[in-house]
Image (tube, rainbow, N blue to C red; front, side, top):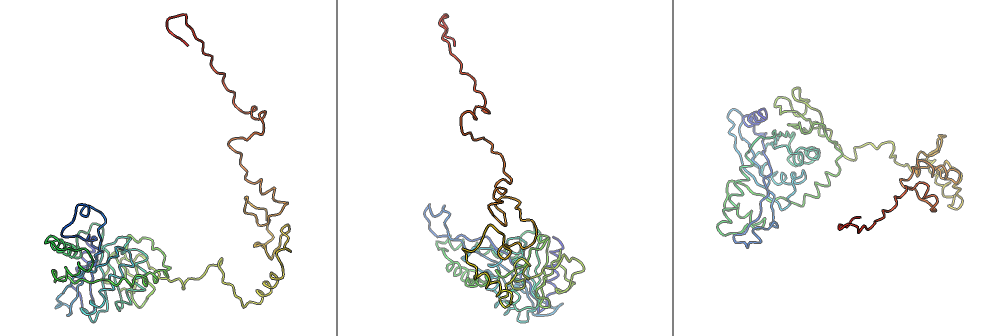
Length: 381
């Protein structure tokens, strides 16, 4: 934890005009409110929720040691409350133009976030870093730093708290914040220090289509990764490191904290296994096989005799099945063998007549005879 904090402080102190640090985090969804509500609306659970993705961007215009680090706070708002990698990329894409205005010479982007496995630290996010974010920001390298568990509050948490407090104060004065437009209008007028943006939700299907082409496998030890480095020099390779390293370049293997390399793969880059072969229609033998099959009609097939051109097994191995229902050749001769394989006795025997049933059935005890004895005053059985 302390190592990550020191690494982030070193990044801030050594920023150059071609670098930038973007600290991001999801804030808790904001529940829309009214200035006056009836009881059922106040205690009901059907209020509209808005997703808030808060961030702080650190940049500079001068080289060290005269680099005065500036920062700008952002909040992207959406009616889509998903917090998965697809929506993360949509929230980040809404800030691309503004970040390029603040850092026109941006060449190396640092991103700092926490490490939940359903949001920022998973194979889907790894794939989108290399295939989408690098192109959108137009940078040569992206280095993603993850904080350790129990890291405490950060700058984005302060942005989220400020946004919600301003909205709640606006509602307390008798106004309504019941929709996305009203929330953006409230923050634009009452909070000048935080830039609020609406995301472009039409990008969601586009990024989902990009993600469907992913064939990136899960990286063993993902929860132990605290730094990812991607570079245009190796666009299909992401280096995973146990801790953040500021000495080794993003495109080289870290000699301090390297854990492995994540291969970014797409579906078209995969080599089909031997079991799923592609049929080549130009092969001459295929035409001969298809012509033979077309000449044979369904009535001329003899199922009592194995045929190598039809049966999927063409070897000389014995065709006796191992279990019922998995026979390569089902004929009247071996049908009895198939039905007798792995036949287990029933728990209860079925009897055709009463004689067989009396052979194994347990003997019933005779019923007790109740005798009425009225000799005494008490009744006894």
